[in-house]
Amino acid sequence: MKILVPVKRVVDYNVKVRVKSDGSGVDIANVKMSTNPFDEIAVEEATRLKEAGKATEIVTVTCGVPQAQETLRAAMAIGADRGILVETGSEIEPLGVAKVLKALVDKEQPQLIILGKQAIDDDSNQTGQMLAALLGWPQATFASKVVLGDDKVTVTREVDGGLETVALSLPAIVTTDLRLNEPRYVTLPNIMKAKKKPMEQIRPEDLGVDVTPRLKTLKVSEPAKRSAGVIVPDVATLLDKLRTEAKII
Amino acid sequence: MVALVIAEHDNASLKGVTLNTVSAAAQCGGEVHILVAGSGCAAVAEAASKVAGVSKVLVADAAHLADGLAENVAEQILSVCSPYSHILAPASAFGKNVLPRVAARLDVAQISEIIKVNAADTFERPIYAGNAIATVQSADKVKVITVRGTGFDAAASEGGAATVETVSAVADSGKSLFVSRELAKSDRPELTGAKIVVSGGRGMGSGENFKILEPLADKLGAAMGASRAAVDAGYVPNDWQVGQTGKIVAPQLYIAVGISGAIQHLAGMKDSKTIVAINKDPEAPIFSMADYGLVGDLFELVPQLTQQLS
Image 1 (cartoon, one colour):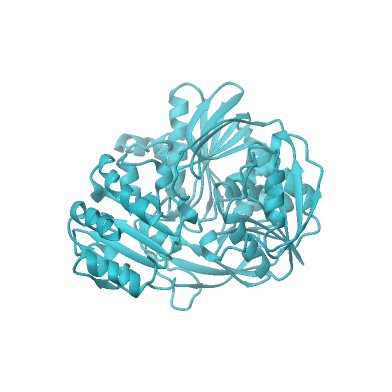
Image 2 (cartoon, rainbow over the protein chains, first blue to last red):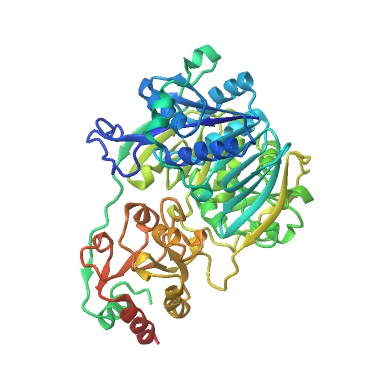
């Protein structure tokens, strides 16, 4: 069984982004970029399925600037077998990404697609669900456990208030939540091996896909800041403040 | 312009976050309708018809709509959505799961987790875990939107008199099957809708120690939450998690106990009206956000607080 794992290059989760002074976006020049953490979990899960003998090939794909090749190499260092870079100049939206992925799925015919539940830059949480809809496939989002059978996949999902389990007929789409697995530390020999794995480079036009954005970002601004309050000396003062100033208890 | 709100419910009662979504829908400028897709969900439809500002409730009732499966619910929305200019759902596990399918099938962009409606086509939404706010304008014919409940006041649950109309249920996709659900049982209010939240962090030291927060939460009628550090340490279950990767809350009062205040946690609670922090480290970042800080040993301060409340 072939598994497709789309990945995204994003600002590293440890970086506190700064909004540009002209309000046109956030400043990502010279900041550390990494694989979206949820996507790393997706690659890890696919790799474990392959190691368990349940998958035969893992294809990883990304849409983005040429430097996104690094993200594909990182996925290949974990365990993906080959990579596809769909080179897009500007930012593309989840709908555009889903259309690109659909065209690739038509070509590659995977039985399972594992994606991160959301990218930590635009926080959209859409691509997996959109791809599932375009393909007419079932989906299990926010997965914390994946059990792959021959013709179905059983997935435990993190939902509000607890867990939910669904069974999907294959082909299907799974999006990962944080607790699905802990991605391995990548070893140097595997990084070296990843450099030799095949990587294809194409453009959305080659797939006949229009990725023109539908949303216009008018402005990006800093969130309203909270100012620090006061340190109170004891519990009695705290309760007094909560009663008389904040009036909430 | 008419907006359609997708109701979140458990077939017995309408979930509170639907009311916040109704408020966002009303701000889009037109009439508001609600779709209730479920099984044996007449009580939900009745509750939806009483929500202030709602003029019509559509009900699709079928066994395969019982568990909110994305494939079936999305298809149901698509079957009724043609008259609508806006389709909105709560940005909950349910709404996030279902709505992008609808947007993709309509060939429109989805606008996720809006916190403000500026105009019928312009919305504000947090990006980078709330470290920036983007104002976006949609050129699409239909706006498909998920709504962050904490960004909007809840519509009144009484006072409306909407007509209730039954619509025919779509066929079962047959591609996905609901197997089981394990929901944590609690007498406390639900985390995202609670007026007061008491949260513990790694400073609690163990799952056992979370017990000292319980009497405090009981006395305040508060929901209980936790930081990701406490969840990762295995002290409490994941659905307690408040933060970028967990739940976004904005209660009247948020009490952070033994929480240092990592960016990822602050992203989930910074819109709370009043924040109280209890931590032994006076340098903890949480104090730069808190309205009232109490520096000291939480194992002494929390019982004192509980006791002096009575």
